[in-house]
Length: 107
Image (cartoon, rainbow, N blue to C red; front, side):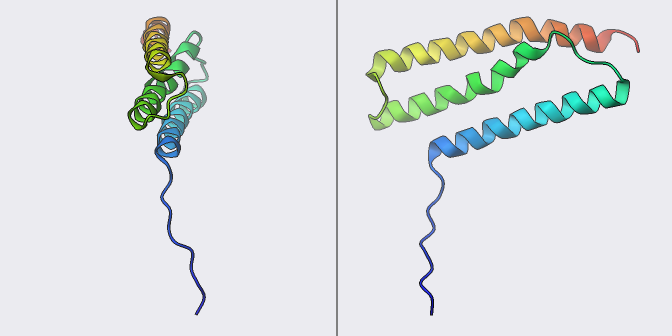
């Protein structure tokens, strides 16, 4: 019999990165589908791409802080979370009005 290697699940960071990647692929699929279906682009919506990363990074930061492996300790972890919240807020503040303006204009 062959020795099969033991199963090692992916780390928490890799799972978070995979979920962020799935969200990006869904966003890009929706963007491409809309562009092909309507022959129009969605200008001004690029800031929305900040949102998935701004949501995913704090999960990793908090996880590393709880394990005691966060670089820079608690101060840097809090700073990173604040920057991520600001990125999400900025992305939504700049991207959502542009998205809604593009979607409400008649074809």
